[in-house]
Length: 442
Image 1 (cartoon, rainbow, N blue to C red):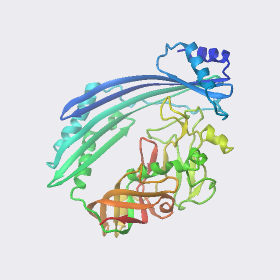
Image 2: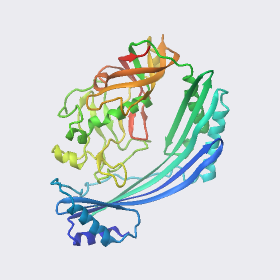
Image 3: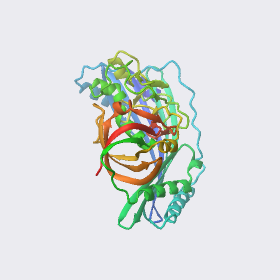
Image 4: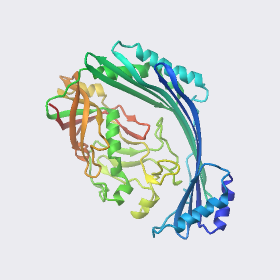
């Protein structure tokens, strides 16, 4: 498809601005079941999403066949625009003054054959199966890989592109001891194929399952609590919409109008960093073509800025922060962070445990979709982890409910860990020790 010719033709039909958003992707998926290959396939996708402004109204059309008749597509755009009743003003972004140089390293994925990748997951499964006699079943062992290229071209002369690729290795383990059965799940997402270590993945998944065996609740009371980095990431992600200009327009965040106010402890800084080294989710520009940049969302406890796309920035009479992203090529523009993370401290998780006379290490929280309220900040989540006494982990715990308020707890931090973890979803945190959170147990 010749983007420039399509745009010129659309403009002659009466559209005042046109944008073509194109993604081409290749996804590899391999999985095992009982030692045999259950799936081994490569899928290719080629999707075009066209936005056009006609008589002040924005319309969309999405297609996959690049040979699609351009006259029909333009007619559909105009038809869609004419059917709209909104008076809202829309914008197609002309482009930022400059964009960062962006290079994506292959990471060795293309050098590894399908046979290599099948052997990789078979090795993981074999190692895990033979690591401990209490390992009884491996529900899932799989590998996936994705390569994506994105290009945005519009009628203002903007023509920008970005690409990325990553690999994922996943293992789930079931362990049983007497009547107790527990699962362990390990996922590694990486930019480099060589980082996928079968021994490490198997060991972590098995250890997670074994360490949960014979868990039981603790007494109900307020405990000093260390929330492990990966679980803290999940919690931060659940409340990340607090920082969204889109949520602010809908009155769905407690932070409306609080820029410049102290909302968290002075030890807390939260950064949105699209260029974070080694992060999976790195972005030179957002899905509206606005250049991305590193920004302080919270600095030493003070709320500095909402995250904005073009629409929310216009509503609040400010500028886009380069956080306008889609859930997919055909999706609507929303607001999302890019490596939104809590800046880590200097103490290791082991040191935090050693400095705890009695408390809990929380390694898993469930019910994040229903058990938290990003409007109020309140949460009540079923949790599991370990009981700490005299600076040592003494036993696993489960079936407890940890409750609190996100903003209040971020004002009650005792220690920030040094073990920053950034998920493939683009949210990060270290392990954090809180002075006290109420726990409902037995």
